[in-house]
Image 1 (cartoon, rainbow, N blue to C red):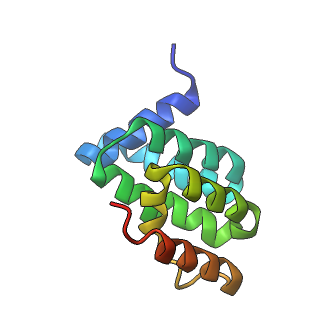
Image 2: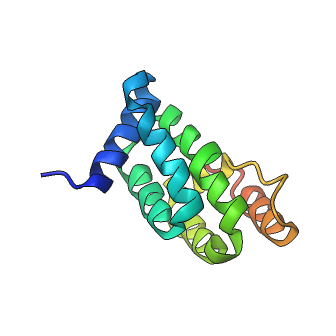
Image 3: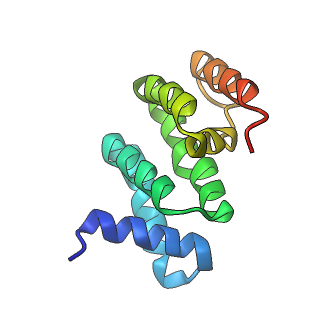
Length: 122
């Protein structure tokens, strides 16, 4: 039996795979979690990363929830991001899709450094 979080995650992946309007609620709900419950959003981001191998889904994850999480709560998550980028090649690919230009200066510098360090990871 799926719980609400599992349903959100699977539907978010489905939405970004097929763009079915009836699944758009998952996009909105994860966006809301990024703002109001960043720890839950982080857990969802990690689970989506683990569950999907689609370049489209992972690209949307990078440029959407992960980027927004780092923009709004970067100081709380940057240490985890740095650790996961070093340890997990799939997360390394995710961090490369984040646009850091509008982030706090210290967070932006750390993201850009990670992106440069792992530029050759495909």
